[in-house]
Image 1 (cartoon, protein in one colour):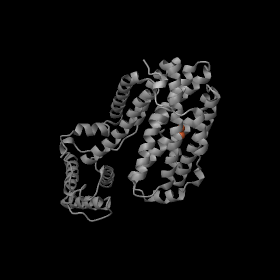
Image 2 (cartoon, each protein chain N blue to C red):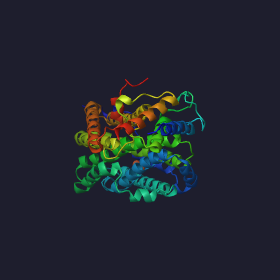
Image 3 (cartoon, rainbow over the protein chains, first blue to last red):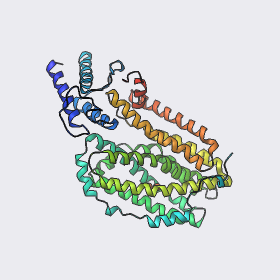
Image 4 (cartoon, each protein chain N blue to C red):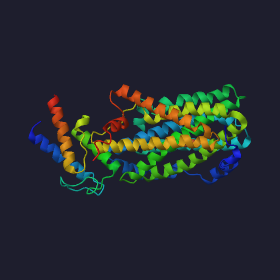
Length: 90
Length: 319
Ligand SMILES: [Fe+2]
Ligand SMILES: [Fe+2]
């Protein structure tokens, strides 16, 4: 997976997280915190994560890769990590 | 082993439930389905799937209870019980009509009818409900059979499964960002009706226990709640497990919250019918049935259920 594709995936993460914010659609910064700054509660996080997985066709991540997410940046890193692993595995 | 009927909190009599029924009518045709049809199109596919899955289970349950109540009516123990039960079958028909109309309005009825698999309730619980209610006709002189049927019907399908799924569906319906007023009002009406049905079931079972039928009642209850635990886990239906850890944990907490509500009801019903002493044993049976269903899920899908995945993730990964 090329750097361009990974950058595209990160941008897609930001777009979706912003679009699905319970506070209303917005353009989030990577530093924005998902709960405190973007208003996500637990159900909204599930909805957003499931949408992200469908749109980016993500599969299960190995437990050791399961970093938790506080900011949009963490989420971008997690998604890029999953995509890289998939690339390595194929 | 049991508390006497006098020690237990009052439940409404069949006569009082009949009167309440006359005062609590509602009409499927008066609900604003067109507004929901518009709102439904704006739902994200995630919420549409979640709501549709829940509505499909409720619909299947309503159809099943509409089809299986008549033996309890035919062999009701008193004229007041029979009068009340006739109101209940009218309610159940109305509930089926509500879900039919709802699914039609949001354009999902064809999908539900064409679904290749059964709803989990139909698959796992309905055969036992049919057996228990059918057994009443085979041996009408045996009151134990009537009570065992009412336990499957009122105490477990309605007072455990119905209450739990109705509650989480209403929470979802309020939580989505679009207005679904017909669903909201319909489910509120349904919940009111169901509370009468459950009152009747509790009063009947309490009378059964007091009259010496505690044993068949407890036996039926234990068998039925094991199946109910299985219905809630849904070992044959894939449950979405988000890869984002925070989302996986939130999803697991949401599911476990639902199971917890059901487990509390399982215990509470026993106290209300005078079988307080049986609570520990029955709750253990519930927990074991849930774990067995989770094992089956894992065997079927080759991956743990999201609740077990979240447990494996543990508190260690939390920040
Ligand atoms: Fe009903
Ligand atoms: Fe009912």
